[in-house]
Image (cartoon, rainbow over all chains, first blue to last red; front, side, top):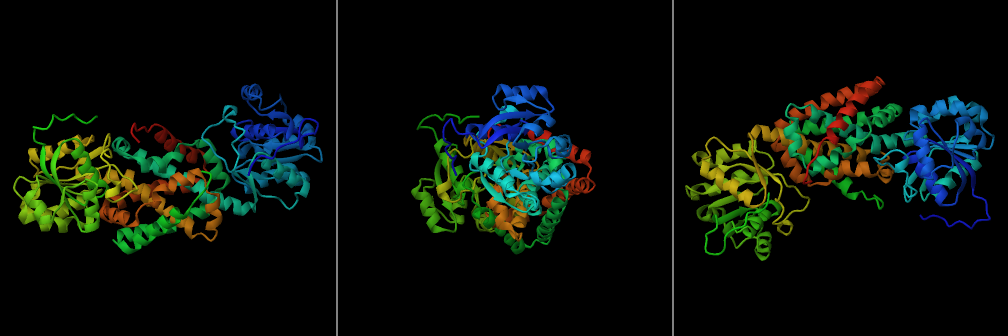
Length: 300
Length: 300
């Protein structure tokens, strides 16, 4: 999927005023991509760190700094790229200032809890909020990490609410398409289960394993001899403890359900090992190898 | 550490006749590296697959094909690069033909079981066998995968036996140094525990996880959305089921002990998640992140 060429100067951009709350990797890249695509006019930045916002302005990611209330009153589209835990507070500050035709969306890694928080904060204006999740991680953070190309060829999942009108949904969808992303719709519960499985669980298991190695009496010997398999298996364990704590807690129920399923396979594998059951061990490993060899992604 | 330049033609190589049992990635690379270093004269290849041995001869990895008995009678140094499970049978065929000054070594991924098998097969000639393990994996197999540079800058662990004489140990050590490797000595039980931790356990956990994902009703949806974290975490799960089954069973006791320790951390992490204990979750993730960020290997 490629960026759609925009007609020149005279025509108004699709989004007159965009507000981004949290101008870091996710929010800053969204602003940069939409600006590059000619999809937005003015960009407002909202956040708690004045230095970070000033840096975002210097970098041209935003045109001006705004409060949540100002952003709510002025923006046609608001991207909430804050940590999941801080979303409700920002929405509460915005609520009474929101215009009826303002559309809000977010970039949070989990959706059920975000939707609960948004319902509590927005009340009868919940229809203006279209939950979303761009699947485009990176270790880097902050405005310096923003990249107009971050979302090109990436998947963005929207988990629309029954209250969302077609126009609100379309405004969010078109913005992501302007960023070069593929947009998928999905039920929020399904989203959270799928992400628990293929994103959060690897991080959880990698961190558990890394901690176990680090606590061993002979950890230094172990780490000195660890090679490329170890390197790849533990790469994600180096990620931000704060961010992943929030993701795990926010997606607690789905994670616990997945963990029960992982434990069932772990128990079977351990039982095969204990019983020296080579056939059972082989079959389990072959199932994993077949699945992994059959997995292909063109864009990673 | 670099290859030591060898003096020219007139001087005899350190190893007059080398025999390699199993001329694949490990054995073939050893032969190729030693030949390139001028460390060996004639190289004999032993194996069960005539086509593979003929290919090894065409590739110049070996000079001639030999039976185990012929290799035992002629070689100054014998590298056993067979699967761990097949080692005892080959040694039994060799025993009565071995010269008193022949030295044997191996490249098996686990050492305690190999040593037991070698003791059973070699009896009072066990002092001629110096157990070893080059830590240089690769997905490729067979003589085509052999590479004279495979062991450069890599670690090779020797787990000497009380019965090994200094000359036998030195012959094996010098051969690995001629391959460009770093040679470490380690107790066999410690080796097996360390390798269980930093090599076998990641493969075990990655395979368990991959199997769990593959068995999910919505596996196709999951795999379609999996990204770079999933990719790295599961890369090793694509490895050979036969090879890894043999490694796990061969290192069963160390694996079970490590698994108990991994489960203790897993239980604590799950309990923190269940209790919504953000501090405990953060501390565990921070411990993992600190350990992983502090890990550096210059050569991987």
